[in-house]
Image (cartoon, rainbow, N blue to C red):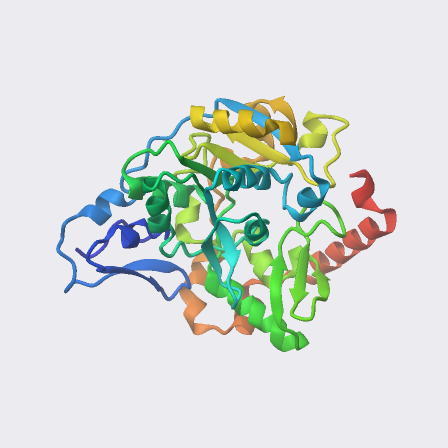
Length: 387
């Protein structure tokens, strides 16, 4: 066997690698910076199970949302530490209160983004907050399966392709499994993100221990970068001017499969879809956005049962799928692929981070000035207080 699915469509979910009983498949970084399955032909028995597990080859059964909600966590402290309205934290806390486990993306000690499993309330902070990086799923599907087989509740949160990968890996539905997919814009590579982290550390002489893509401290809900250093100090950066985020925001640095994503529509693979309710001010006049608002698509009966259990801990409004689609383009179609992406991926392995920035990830002077002026005005008028 030479490949499990067409490489341009491979999402890197790693379901194939975790499924292989012979250890014949490992996830390796390709020249473009992304992880792809590598087959050891000496260990491979050509059983074909990896191909059957791949969600690209055989997409799991998906369904349209049963209900759509605008919502936010009643606990302002948790809500402010979340990227959106803090719905994830409510669900995750409920799962842990039942003796279950929660699996989501977190930073490891070297600032790599990896899926981690926690079973205590004080571990949820690591999983909270958006991380616009492709996470490595490692062996988390195996760990979830082990927990499910013992009867424990398990809650998995990831991109739609990762949720689909988990479902294909399990081969069956479990009553004690709850899944949430994210309304996903697309993912740059972890390697590029770590390059950005190391560049900041070299330039400023500090060690980074946390990186918040969606800090609310200055402007409320939105995209504002907060870097937390080892000495506990915070530094803020204009998101649109940070090379890593600029490439993400302009679709330059995304994985090739993101541009042909089969999950960028309203047919969802999870029980509850999580996202931002970006047009809340228009759809629900009088609702304040600054502290964060979540969009929830409840896609299954199981998801609705959990929603009914947790809804006393959230404020919510009934919405419609049409309202959700107006504010979330990835519920309609994948992002468009710019020509710069092809050039960026082709030259990635030959450029260091500085060269990569100069060629692909540096905004124009006009754009830079515009961003600085916009942020200065927001700070001057106290934008987050009336947003």
